[in-house]
Length: 311
Image (tube, rainbow, N blue to C red; front, side):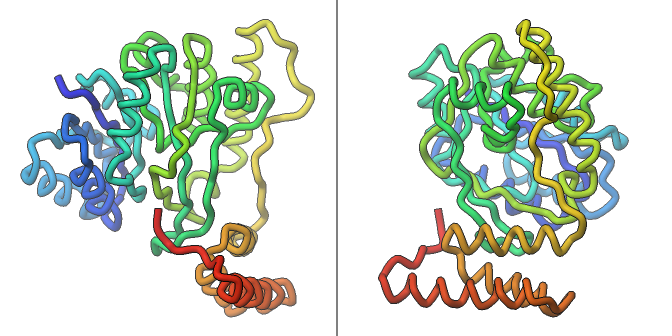
């Protein structure tokens, strides 16, 4: 049995699947398998998966008619044989020592059932957008989750003890979205959660992805997960729903990326997206963001504090 089983569900991921799998093939720790479920892709993904599986016997591919992320992950979990299971989404990129770092952490901390890490958000083109730091301790992580603050651990960065994950029944099938928020609160009821104090992942943002297209669904299912968790723990319901960022248009998403890139010191990304905003819909706000990005970059370069793009 391998030490780690990597669970991946993919639907029409032809643009990124080889890059993501390539980041796993290059891990410094080699004792792993990839269990990837092709969830009814209609693009070139199936052919790319065949090539990847032929390249490395540790890549195991399963195909099915489209059934959604939750069912696909549970199918991958059923096929997993590793002591630990790791998650990554197609489009994301793992640092070469991600598996080694997280496995060593879990080996040393038997009370921890799941560990994540910090990450860098990247654009569809691979440009760095923001450095996302997660809290490190169980009290901070679970305290945030149970208080209505999802996102204290990144789903795509998780490494979980397989025994713990199967003991709680895996992902709840009724959760078509927000399944990670629900999962983490259930895991927190049988053990501790933690994040490694390292940036081990690049997480690719998608303005057209589920988080954007199905925000209402995410709010509804996140509220259900929070209600269920508080009920299980004998806590009173909260008056306010879980706090998720909301938006009204694609330009709202791009404006958010520009502001986050400026705050994280990724000024080139900020300028690129500020220009796109100006071309898409000229506005005073877009112009102000462009000027701000340029001004902050000049200051950073002059002071010797310009951020170097990378891990």
